[in-house]
Image (cartoon, one colour):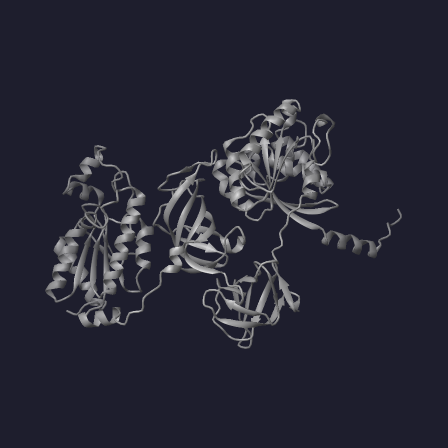
Length: 633
């Protein structure tokens, strides 16, 4: 057999042509079983990116797991998880690369099931075009609406309505026209630059890469023709320079660099730059990448920036063009897609991750949620799984940002549960609230240290938590009496008492309980700042809110006291008759009966209130305070 000669020049030319091709990132989405994975498998097959052994394996898997009879089940190329193959659904986001002679593509196959909507949002976050699959038999469904609306929120400007399985309605133009008109009407006001409807059969390849004689009535482009030619403008180098710092690179005493991926703009050696949050300025001394030093770098490149001066720059800071600093704020208007089975509760503190910065944050107000079918704005106190809302958001410290519509990196964020570290939401900043820039800290000369020295005591909040009837208020009252008899300055915040005035507008839903504790915590913080020993007696059933309260105070200023009384003992006491009413169904959301109590995991003090007398338990608290230097005997 004669060897085929290899032409190095031809290979180099081919590689050069391939590298110079434009890259389009798109995703497939839509309702469950509309053929998303099948479409991607067909694209890979038609692009001739499958080897013979892959085809053989695919035919074998099709006989075992397939749903297309004797035909190849192209969905199995993408659905790689065993659970996906067994159920015939997509669960995780799967990314695939393919190319044609005109363009390169990265496609994300996202799940259609409602419970996996968060995975769809993940796939859409980096896409420039969305292919919405619609089953020609079923038409436009609720999940079609939801995915389309999420795509618009995430800044996708180009949309294809792939009306799939047209073979199952006998290639009917009437069915196509009806569904296409319905969808065009629904999506018309969502701000898409291009919206094209294409009839196709992903299973048989009709109008995917090749035109179909069975769809001769359709005069538009095939899917591949449209993907190759759609004009996706993404000049991220046009805006001002932005570098979110991911790592301070300091391998030795002679080198300090700031590493990250440029989110926007271009930077040159010698350019003046500023740290957005602090306002510290310098100039670019050098730009280093994996292949050495460069005179300039642009958006999308991973670089290490070396500055002429040693200024304070940390992970999460934004290094930017000196002449164009981004806004810095701690209050925002944003859209949030909620991704957790546990509802979003205003006032509850979450971690917010934006770029490489992570800060504490809470939703102050849910302005409305959106009905994805009608776009109607509905009143809401909480958000549940897959719901989308417009909210006002507050962060614990100011952050540099840009609206998501102009900068995805600096305007997009995720929300993380502080106890489980699970991602529970994704959001897009719309604008900073004006009041955030109008309010400033007033400098005062008399501070907490002076006030506490004047009182001769160490300020602290003693946070008593436990079931209703556990004995919290009784013990707290005894502790306060002992402290006052010793000449200490105190104040008792009792859960029932604050609901008569400060929190009289709150009920007992989870959201209202969170707000009740947020307000009480802030009042307690002011009192500790006044130099007082504060006793706070609240059921405070949720660990997240107790953690939120703790984080308001400096180290050593918060002492958690778990009044550990078994439910049957507290219910037997029932001094206010509340347990009896709850058991009869006359009192809803009662802690321990139909609302949970999450016991503290690492409290400073545990009081066995079901065993010892209240006076003995109060003395234990006094002993703790004396032993840890809060009071002198």
